Length: 306
Image (cartoon, rainbow, N blue to C red):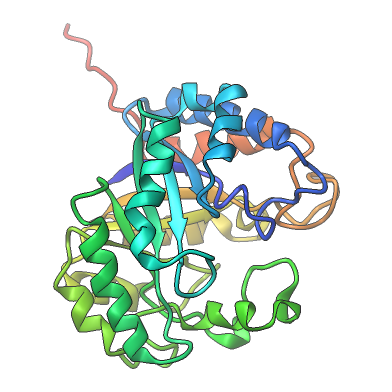
């Protein structure tokens, strides 16, 4: 079941939205509103989520309020990685949530990516799982741990500057509870204690060979809530419909928060051929969102009584 649709991923993070092409986020705001309307038209029961902000910045939310984005979304999502990328300690999680609640009191706040990697030591990740659960379970309605699997290094991470980012780039490959070779890490059993209250966030690449293994692991751990994505970029690949159908069928037993993001690699679609480029025509992204909801979470139509 698709519970929610997330509009973009980390729009205030320059690795996922180009600030040089949209310095005041006005183009993003326009696109987000069109996408929210498209999702609602396709199925009004699917919650509309403003893509997980990273950094957790109340000023960005204030800007989205001015643009009217908060009028058309139900949830504001936040991402935090205080032991890997953020410049605040893990104990400040409740404070960070409160900062967003203060500027958007009418909205639910979800933590749709929380995580601690094993880049330095697996024991650090064990601490991170337990401390995050202590601080956030019961504090927000939805929490998704990032992630189930480590990202294989040969696949590369979706960032703008790759290896030039130094250790920040390489930490992307150590965020899972299971190593890329399928070996469980120490933190896996600690996570098990918090499912199903804590969900999992797992991206799946195009024709991802890990899909079936992921389903087995998620069910073994007792996970019922999953955040994943359907890539607008992937929808321009040959065979995309077969892959999307296979992915969504395999995940049908979970309550899904489905993320839509990433501009296709085409100068005809974005000013630059890059996944962070604001689309030239935001209605094209909105159309993609609506079509995906109609395909995988169609609204129940009232039956006419003869």
